[in-house]
Length: 205
Ligand SMILES: [Zn+2]
Image (cartoon, rainbow, N blue to C red; front, top):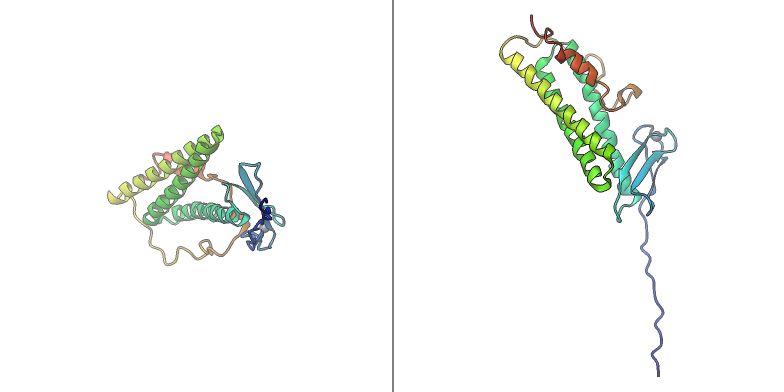
């Protein structure tokens, strides 16, 4: 008298998680994240404007998680680009005190990038990630140094902020103005910063 085999019931998780997302760059609902078990990373890509980003994943990663990571990276990169453009403007307008702040934000941003790259390296052991981590670390150190030197010059009275009615007469700091030009590649501005601060005569009057 054998027991009747119970029919195996497979409960399927009802997936109501979104699969297509709105692009932060072009605004179309055309962003997809293809999560496969084979790949170590997930490529998040917009089918309309082509903006794309590889993000890391784990066993629980759903497209919505990958999209969230993509959004974080997208806005952080955008913030970085915004800060570098602001840095340039502040030099032009001789707003040194605010520049020291911008340098500290830029250093923070670069440090986050360094940490992320290092995490990637620890996961995949890809030497490129280690290279990136070191590059960002050096970039962060450079910004810290820039800010420090500037502060010293300010403290000693060698330089002072120009008086300006309104240093932002243009729209350069409107975070909602997502002009194409602001989404620039990584540390494009480094050469320029070094140009300015590396020139020993620059801050001497
Ligand atoms: Zn797009």
